[in-house]
Structure formats: C-alpha cells, structure tokens
Image (cartoon, rainbow over all chains, first blue to last red; front, side, top):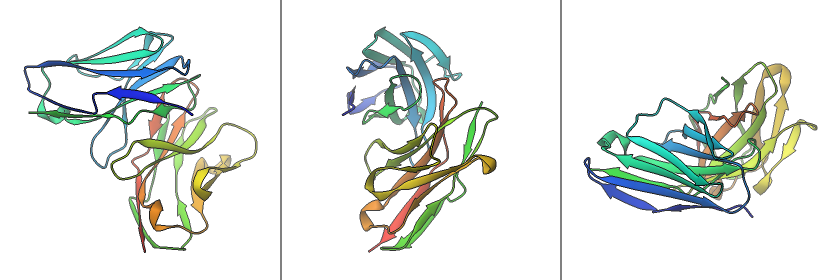
Length: 111
Length: 112
C-alpha cells in the first residue's frame, strides 16, 4: 500500500509568520510534488522534485519555498503569506514520474 | 504542455443509474491517463490508470475507462452507481515528464 504522510493536518498562521509543511514517504519514490487545491477546484501543480533536484517550478510566488532534504522528505516553507493562499496543500510522490500518490493534505488558513 | 478538459461540471444521478464522465486531453505525444476520486473531506485516491495496451482499463469500485486515441478521450464509466460514489472526479494526464495536470473535475451526486 502506498503512503504519503503530511504534517500538520491543519495550520493557522498570521501573515507575518514563518511556518513549514512537511511531507514524508518511505516507498523509494524518486519524484515528489507539492500541489495546491482550493475548494471545489482541481489540484494545481506548484513544485516537482526529481531525484532531490527541483525540476518544475510553476511560477509560484517566492513566499513559498520548497526544500527536499533527502529522497524521503519534502518541505514547503511558508513566509509572509496572504489570506488568498489559504487552501489544501497536497504532497505527492511517484516511483517514476507516472502514477502519483497523494497524501491527505495540510489545510492551511492564513489570517 | 498537456491540458485536460472535463466537460461535465456537476452530474446528478439516481442510484443504479449508469455513469459516464467525459475527459479529453490535448497533447501530441504519448501520455499516461488517470482518474482520481476525492470523497468529501478526503484526499485524492487513484481510481484507475492507462499507460499502454488494452484501451479498456478496469479500476477499483467497479469503475472502468476507455482510451480512444483518435478522440483524445479517456471517459470514465460505471454501469450502476451507488450513493457512496458521491464525490469529485478528476481526470489527469501525465506526459512522462513528472508533470501531472488535472481537469477541472466533475462533481457526482448520487441520490438514494
């Protein structure tokens, strides 16, 4: 069974705060992803890491900063966010860039 | 880059009705195709996928999808829906480059 673990499940932060979302997978997958999903909308690709290197950055504002410390971990550092950044942030991983397996997501509210 | 269109925004069916959700993609090369489901308040789950071979693929929970290359389509079907199938359904396409793109989604409501 596949498992992508995300923490925290819920995060409320102020516009001046610095926080991080964390993602972990132990399936040996070499690609890891961050998606953003607003209510009743499809997931939007933010970043892709392939073999621990950033391979896709979908013109995401610099207040979102991804980091891939090793092949099992993926972080999303958040700083000076806006209320419109409130969304469900989904981490995903893939063994070879085809089938993607999603975590349960982190619900972010910016106040 | 590839793109995906789902033409049905919201579909309402009664239990036991048959389901077909449309999905069309735009990309000139080889693609991998997927359907994901998102139940209310839950994360995305893979229903089925097509990489190559038999264009009729079967997934979990009685769902199937047919890849028609000439029509750039990958429609999702189920012969008889249940109330528990109420969810959001997303078609997605990946062009073998780690870049997975999703359609806008179709909300399915099944009335008991």
